[in-house]
Length: 525
Image (cartoon, rainbow, N blue to C red):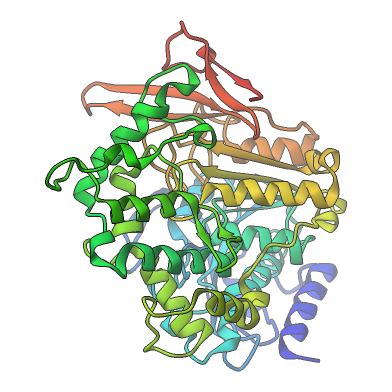
């Protein structure tokens, strides 16, 4: 039996047997005595209410008193997964809400854990098996077990271990368990639903990077299109003109001109309208730049013309594309950093690999062959998760500059094709958020109870609240309210708008106050 299987089996056995008698409920320090195969309990300490300072982070404030448990897991000889669980000393709501990671992971999502703790949850997360900045993949160089930890093993062990710690501390199991994460965390979320369907009862998956290999090959194609020929590179100085042209074409499709394209799928913006008529300046595009921009919108294709990954949506290029898509110079964007790290350290083990000279078809095949089994979470058959009683809410910003929102649309279609539309509706919803960028932010209302954030109109109105209601009471969610504050600090304007379950879209009634949700309705296009 492998060490990984032994660890998973042993943790599952602890859950089945219950908390050992030596551990008294609500005795935090006694958790130091807990033993797990291939794991070391580094600390178990009560933290007083107030602030908590963690290295490299702003102090976390307004925390209730809690029990902080730190464990390092070694499921293989090359694994070191740092795990933490935070357990309220008082007023536990009876639920477990675990967190995921972003980018290439490398740290625990303490800020989100703090938000969960303030709302009464027991909460846990890990660093996915390494310590590094989110854009750094060098930890994976010649470490296949660390890639497996990152891909699926760490999040699964987090689910098992967090439940065991909860039972040891409270002397009872959680009423329900949930997972809430975005980006790579969205990939982790779908990995859980696909591979480990019994881990969580409800999953909130944002902007999932689940088709990891295809997504980063898409980045390769776009980097080549915009950076291999310097004449094709689009300066960020041109982003305001691009955004304005897109809004001129499509902003009013939902009946309201407000700087947000509610349904970019129906937008037919052609960047050729920005063709330079005279000398090039920041208000126009050259022909090579128009070609590159069209590729960014359309997404990458292989040598046979088959789409590898869908493209980005128009309407919020400025400023969100600056860091993610363009950078300050050719091949200088975050997207290029991610794809370079992936191929150099996870796929090829070749630090000299150059994205500008790589063959696209070969790169895609190699990525799938060497890492797909560890990092791709694309299986549409969620029948085991559904049979467990699990509920899944996915969400994605229509103006995400990092991961095409159409990827989530495609995954929902794949699930319903595999399981049937009616069966899919029983346990999965997708919310496409107009004017939202990557996980949060953007010109539209974009705070709706994701990532531990508050619901738009308080307790009970957020995405996690509605997910819990679906899991615990069987009431499926309808529109979710999203909020954004605009205007000045002295005179803020609160805008609340419904986000509709896809394929419905938000339509303005043409006469009401656009700042309140009653002026909008969900309509099927």
